[in-house]
Image (cartoon, rainbow, N blue to C red; front, top):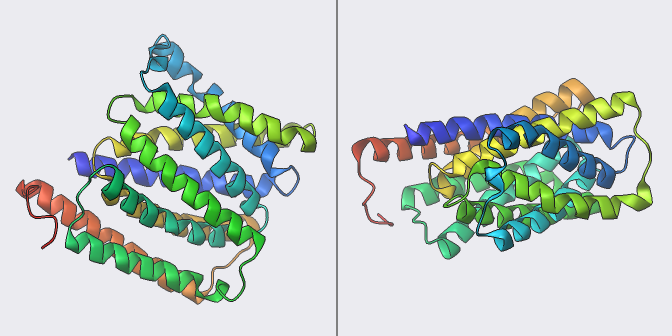
Length: 293
């Protein structure tokens, strides 16, 4: 049941993030990406205030301020790069390029956290990576600034996810999400000052929506990590391609090519197998099987 709960939380989180990315792409047509990132963090923190007040701010108690600071800085820098890339290349392409994150996270979780990854999950993950390569194939002939920025953001995001896994052992999802925003706000504010312009009323509404979607997604995403291994739920991020394709078409008239759909199908199939395999092992109570078999 914990596995299924983690999967559900992860899927809802990816939907929130996809809607947030579409909102960012819309806003960055008129506002600088750094300013959009600042308001995302500010409104995101405001969206968490009711939960903080209800907890009487006990969520701010932690013995790992250093790790929270590291995560806030890394995540903040990743956000700046990511939002800038959303202003430069199509939504589906940004999503496709961000699929490198699970690979970095899985490797990091094994090396840093000592998590075990079984041969069948490795095979399924490799198939998922193959699907990613199918999606990216048309773009490998020329790598522009937007592609470089999203790849850099993806590496930083992977580091942030490993940090979350460590923090989730002792701190709540609300604590982790709140401190990320606390440390990211001054960073995004400082870099946005040279590009500042006052948003109008419609832009403020979208910025508010951006903060709400980001905070809800962040809390659900962090909570998903609490219930299972990193390598199990990270592949579910691949479903963002489906959400990105739908939103990209509805809002921007963007139509993913054949390779995007083919690669997305391969990735989705590998994700379903991973989820099925882990659920089967959990149900059978066979969590002590050899790491490689």
